[in-house]
Length: 570
Image (cartoon, rainbow, N blue to C red; front, side, top):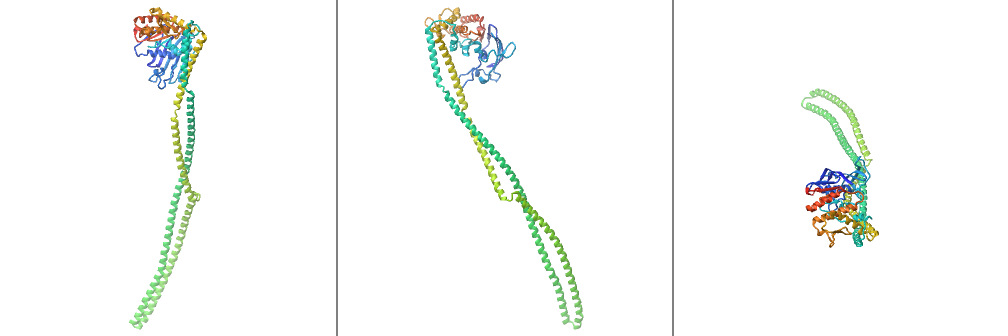
């Protein structure tokens, strides 16, 4: 297969970047900090995706490391060709793996394709991400890599031969030891305890949720009661205001009635006193006149002679008669005036009586309205009003209590460590699955090794040794190196590991071993090879050797070399 081009939306420090790849060798020489390692990780992420975000106290993952700081679209596109055709991968990474997006298009017509799934790396190359890292992905300063069980299983497919029984026994024993270690780790993970704790928290959550539901129902009931009793109170307040208005009218009418009655009584008393005084006055005047005439007559009788008295007497009699006539006329006039006043008084009395009756009638109407307003019992109204006020206070108190209950239940809900327990269960489950997966891989490898033959180790050691020698002995003949059953390289003369070699030579050993593995492991699509500046420790001589190795491989594999120095550029 071949990489054709890529477009990076945003991945680490790379943003809106387009790169085209040559069919054989693509050298990208950029200064430090450009993002060469980021580019290599992007290519790997397009085929294998990104792992989950780092959990607490764990190392920084690629998802966290390469997430754009400015919040841009995290991901991009990669165009490649395989035996099935020409395709374009598009991935968009999010905060979690489950939210990641994967799309595959036919690059010829841009239509969606189902030739590969989101596990395209394993489907295309036949190996997992760890094997990809340990073989075709030459990370910067990470040439030595652990030969994992996936690689061993891939090498043990029946096309490798040999008969080194001791190497097989050691490999099997190491696998058994690793399985025991992994099972020991697995025992430390108590998923049932995690699940029981989580179930307990969910039960508490459900109980609190039910309590909150009841509290909300009670709160709603209290609000309805408050609304109903408040409506009654408003209606009663309206009646109370009407009662106060009618009472004020009633008091005013009663006051007016009392004043009118008092005024009428006063007038009657004054008229009675005046009537009593008038006859006495007329009688007194008449009596005084006759008394004066009598005195004058007596005086004349004794002071003057008898004849004068006799002459004066008729005059006096006439005066008396005249006075009597005047008195009688005056009395008649007084009686006429009295009768006239009595008639007028009677008319006024009748009018006042009608007026008082109307006032009393109005008074009775107001009393009737008040009785109707309170259903005939103002006292009962007052008692019921007090009862309604008590109900309103109870409803308000209930509302406060239910609101406090809701707040208390919410605080308890918020304090439940469900998220932490769920995270722990998820982490333990992932760890358990990871351990079980490793155990399954190891047991599969072990069973396969044990069922193959006693000579299985030599069956893949020999081909790896041959492939390794093809690269290494082609350029270096000073040291005799051998590959053991664990695919570790040793000096043949005393089986010392390559740690006794110089740093540059060690890098060449690892490069040759990786190329040998690439040739043997990938029996499906021949992959590309990504080298992220792996030659930093090589001197000029070894660098030239590395160049020759890469040039010879470029006829078979597409090579992408990332470097920060022009001297290491192909």
